[in-house]
Image (cartoon, rainbow over all chains, first blue to last red; front, side, top):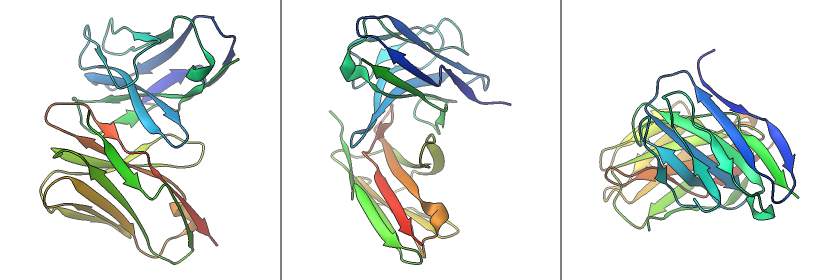
Length: 112
Length: 110
């Protein structure tokens, strides 16, 4: 089934641990994004990639890093998790920058 | 930085009543998109507006882009329980990324 896949679906993580959230799309979209969703704050952009090999910082990039080695994959890494990073994380992709975005199912992350 | 404000944050309506959510930007937008997120789900694209004053309809949903391209609205006529969810607008300026509004959570009381 074509679309965008995130893993894991949910995770409980000890503070200070390193964690990578995975995101894969099979639509050959150029642009990919990571958002976090917190109650009352909507969707905030963490990092983005307009094309394979390039990445950029969004609104809330601190504490997160990304890579885009190929078109399909866009992993998000928390180098040393903190409780304030407890959130629902959504990966998304679009054919081009700012075009209709397709979202993954989300990863619910709890940092304790 | 760019801000996209959305009101109201919450709205409870009786089934059959109308519903409207408003989106306002501090800067002129090149386009605006609307998404719906069902409870426990992920955002799903509804529509994109590009032209000043543009109005688009999808069945009971009417989307409007302001003349100044700084505001937009989504109006649902005669709400149904299937309309429950959070509605987000997302605006873009120039070649920048989309900035999402804070969303309006709609509850429909049967």
